Image (cartoon, rainbow, N blue to C red; front, side, top):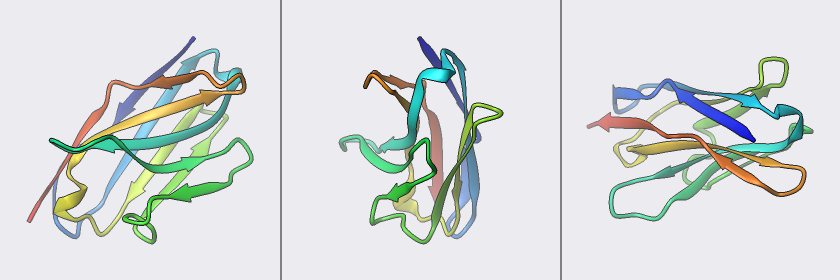
Length: 116
């Protein structure tokens, strides 16, 4: 089992920045890729960014150039640096981890609200 706990959400004005953190515990040695997804009201959950164990990253087109995902394996933590935030970035952001045997775990989510 892997447990994920997000932090860093909040309310900021458009154009501002936030940094989300997700700390993993449990069988962290089994984690391969980690990522962030988000779900806005009345919308489906969408992948925002992901990072592999080797450091390869991919981003949703809507956040490219504004968001940066990184991981610190020594701390079992993944980060999402969000810059130039827009009102449409408002959502609950969920951390996820995928293990080498393809099990996926989710955090409880953290609210990000961007005011115009």
